[in-house]
Image (tube, rainbow, N blue to C red; front, side, top):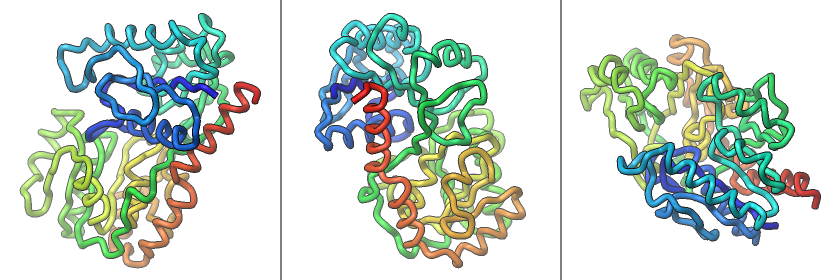
Length: 336
């Protein structure tokens, strides 16, 4: 089976630090190649992969101001679809623009929907749902007006996330600095229980950061480290009493949640979106409905066995399980 994997071009695949869509695309691509599947990754030319790398975009538009997002998005898509007949299947990880080509090729398309940035993009999904095979990344993120071929949870390479059996007394916020992600709520919870909060992630909403986050950052009670990758990322995920994921929106998945849990760190998350699908309440973390409940959960963290959290992630959210699920879908789509 010959697969064309279409990556986003906002960042390199895999990303250097932040970039969940590119990260999932990379993890799946590498797992498929390891299974002997013929995969061509269409991504920015600085991308790193064991697959065949093809593309025309010289650098990610999120990192290079000379790259116009709209111009290079069209060149990226055209470059793939002009050779679509080389492939048995196109797996689109780059949102709705690829659907514009769906009626211009006989090659079947699978689109992983990584979340809806706005209801305004729905027409580019509804119009093509009889042609494109949609994958939801959680049952919670299935749109009621769309038909889906599967729900496939993300997976991670478990062995890349070492278990930290002890953690620390400090708390962790790991995500975009944006009102949706509950950065201010994490600060409030940490203050109430008197624990140090370490914050990691890109500043996506500068006004929110300057108003609700930066005044609290003092290096003693709250420390903001920015976006990190590599060993720093792994250390941050494992060296915490708990991950605070006090979201204020319906999270489609939450990759950092399972990454932290793979390191043994329990997640304390708002009971919204996909969180009940990821977290077993009282076993791998806690699902909460208020700041009071979050603070109660912080004090109950010692009830949870960190090695049991890791085992649960290994059982349910491995990259091998994700790759197997996608291969099952690919074979159904192409009829093999």
